[in-house]
Structure formats: C-alpha cells, structure tokens
Image (cartoon, rainbow, N blue to C red):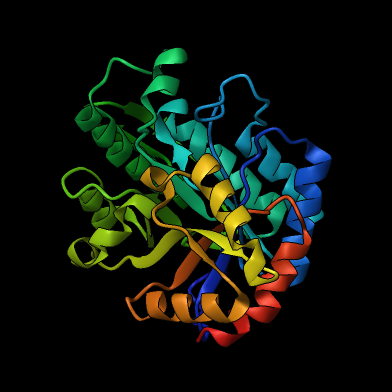
Length: 303
C-alpha cells in the first residue's frame, strides 16, 4: 500500500470536465493534457443523464475512469461527486478498489447523497427523503471503509445488513481519500465531519464558507469555481455569456472571469479563506491548451 497523506506546498488544482456530449477519445485527450500540464486532479461527473439536457450523450463515470487511468500516469482521478443512490456500497467499494489498482493508487473517492431530483425520479431512485438518503450515505461510507480494510465483517444498519462480507483486493492507497460534496448544514456537514478527508464546498455554498467550515471536523477544504481564463480583456463578454448560459450561479456560484493577472488576485483572495484545493470548470474546457495556460500563467503565482 501507499500513503496519500504527504504534505505539499501550495494549493492543489483540479479540472472538472463533464463527460457530456463527448466520446472516449476526446475525454482521454483532455485527461492526458491535464496530466501533462501539471494539474493535480481530473474530475468527472456522475450522472445518468445530463443535468438540464437529458437527450445528450453521457458516458458512465466509473467505467470512463478506468479508461483514463490506463492513459494517464500522474494525475489523480475521481467523480465529483459520485451519486450514492446509484450503487450498493459493497459494489461501490469494489469499483473504487479496482480503479485504484488500475491507476496505481491515484483514485479520490468523491461521494454525495444524491440531490438531483429529476434524475433520481427518472431512473427509479426516488421515494426516499433527503434525510433518508443522507442516512444511507452515512452507512455506505461505514461499509466502504470496512471493505477497504480487507477483513471479514458483519454490518447491521437501518439501510444495509451484511454477513461475512469482505473486500479483496484492497485499494493500493492506505487511507484512500474521501471527498464529500455539498453545503447543507444539517444533512451534509455532519457526514463530512465523520467520514471525509476533504469537504468539497459546492459553488452555490461558497458565500457561506465561513459559516460552514467550522462544521467540517478534520476535513480539508476544496471548493468549486467556474473559471473564464481570458486571452485578452476583449474576450470577457464571450466568456461571461457562456457561463451565464451553461453554468448558472445556482450551481457553480459566481464565476471568476479575468486575464491571468486578474485571476491570480481573485484566487489568492480565495486561498486566504483556507481553501486547499481548487476544482475548476473552465469555460473552454474542451480546448486541451487551457490547462497548460492556466498552470503556467495563473497557478504558479498563487501560493
């Protein structure tokens, strides 16, 4: 096993690249470009349909992670965040351990209790309250960690019961990082404090970061940002229009749009709030060159 708890200087940088209206070759090229550019994480979404665009093609996230793991060498991979109702926790643990093995220990396990109601209803995962889904996630993470230990176990919960279960092989990583996403004070933050290595603050909750952060327990903070990296200030209107259409503030929060120098100042201010990982959704994320531009023109100046 390998440990993933080594400290490093400066923030971590992740790209969130949704696999919607795309194909395996394109997603592989983007992951390789992010890897070669020096980003720390490459995140996919976990949806059965595109949010707000149900007729568009959407590749399944875990299967695609396995493909990307074979094409990349350094960058960490994951779903931000996985939808817990889609998978039994024992199956989830087996999938995670397998992808961690394929990648040589580069998986981050992102998970949430499932909050996109139209999707849950469309595929028959509805019928449970948000509180019940949060309770299921609590038990699921108990089971995932027991599976990762690689020893036989029994489990008696309200939602899951198991007898003589075992997870083999175990992940490559000792202490595979768990990221829990959300911004709910009553349902999400107690799960973060109990289970998470990282709290992923969704963009819509960033304005409440100061209120929510003390509730996270020992978890480190990551946060999501829609980013428009401009070549010139003349591109501002185009980037802003794309953000307004594709990434309304309700999900990703107020976008950060600017030239490299402007983004450096904006991200430095965010860094001062205690954020250790930036999860970025670039407005031109389908252009592989954006990753290198960001890392060489912006990231190196944010400490």
